[in-house]
Each structure stands twice: as C-alpha cells, then as structure tokens.
Length: 69
Image (tube, rainbow, N blue to C red; front, side, top):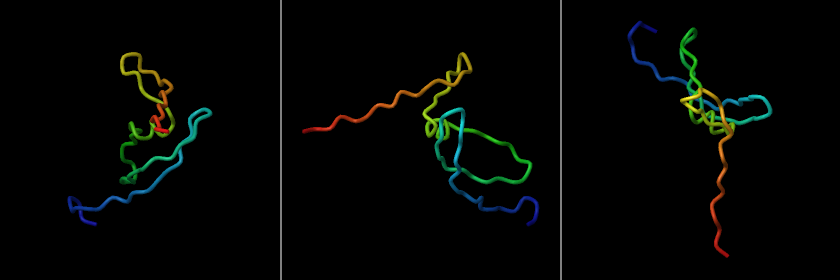
C-alpha cells in the first residue's frame, strides 16, 4: 500500500479482562506500532467508569429498566 493512500480498517470484537471483570467490546485494528486506546465502550462492557478527577476506575451502576405488569 502506498503512503498516504486511503485504507479501510478491520473491525472485530475483543474479549477484555480486568481483575474479576470480563466483557466484550468492538475494536478497530490499526497499523502495527500504532497507538493503543481503551475507550468508554470497553470500560462500560467491563462494568467500569473512569473518575476523571481522581483518575480511578469505579464500578458502573447497572440500572435495569422498569417493566410494566
């Protein structure tokens, strides 16, 4: 492939594990040696959220929708 030519990235689903949490999230496969990014969808799949002020991972409260009888 020529430098600067457009390309279509490959996409897939990856399984992530962090401590006792396991979840799957969509991924985009970049070029070898490219930057690795763990995004909000991946954290949500693991049931986690980032506290931006403390820079800590916190449990994400799972809210189930109400059902009508």
